[in-house]
Length: 459
Image (cartoon, rainbow, N blue to C red; front, side, top):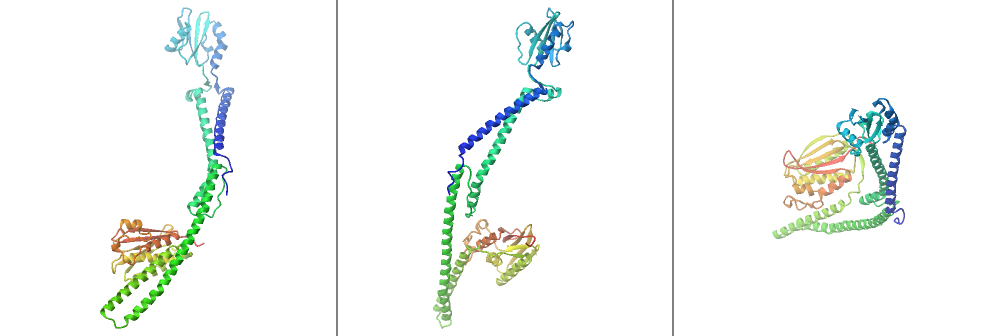
């Protein structure tokens, strides 16, 4: 598969993204202009020279009226009426503005950038009008509670800019995420070692180059896994054949040793024969362990069936009673569960359960008690096995389910090879459950719990 020559480059996509941002900013400016025009057209806002124009319209009336009429001035202005000899006749200006107005009248200019002044000459004196040369709201409430018009326009422009940038970025991010999906899906499938899938293509050249590499990786991993599987299968078959071949001469040795034991032997010969029998049995144990290890790699070959919890638990109880009776241990049961359904492979689960019981027996004092606790917990069936041994060490709790882990060698028999809990956990995981190791809190001893998923109704 060749993907990297198809699609657009990231450089072109980035360029288009920047063009989109620029277009969004232009649209934002256009919207502000439209808003300003509409505000002036519908007279929500008056332009900066609105007050000045009103004064100019009334200027003749103000200068020619018999008496000065302050009502002729717009509302949002202040005034200073001076006599010919520059005495204050009437004003509504504060002292600071009056000083500035006097300076303006004398030709010193305007020292306040926020105010504008207009002088109107009358026959009886001079009228100095102060006003703001900036846009303002028509509504007094808006003038009081909203920001100044210029600040409002600037704020709206910034808001439109931000909305435009965020919206465009989200749109392009969504497009890029869509193009990234084939990469994420391929990586996830390879991570799960599920190599039977088709690598999808992207519309971006750089992504296709990565997808092409992932396709090659998938093919290589698939071939490698097939090779490993064939090698493992070959190895398992060789181990099974070798174990079977060893059993034949071992059986002959055992049989002949039994026949030899029926003859008249000297004391030394009896001793030598004991060594033969003991080590023959040990070799037999080693072969059984080898075959068990070989089978532990095949725990995924399970035959699941749906079974009622009642039938399943009765089978577990029977196994526990047979086991404790064989090893002369006491069995204490505490069983309370809901009769739901489980999906299990009974044969392999029994194997896991017996491995846990064997582990408990190995660390239990003679004639001690094994406790079997079974209860329903949320959507799980919990099966706990408690012994009265020394419990797990901190190292045991971390590594007891690892293959060939033996922990404290002084507490293990020579027949223990550290695979019982490993095999048990593998089987239980294949059932969708989990194995929990902990120490008892009521007394000395270990507690091993199996959590199995249950179903409330039968399909």
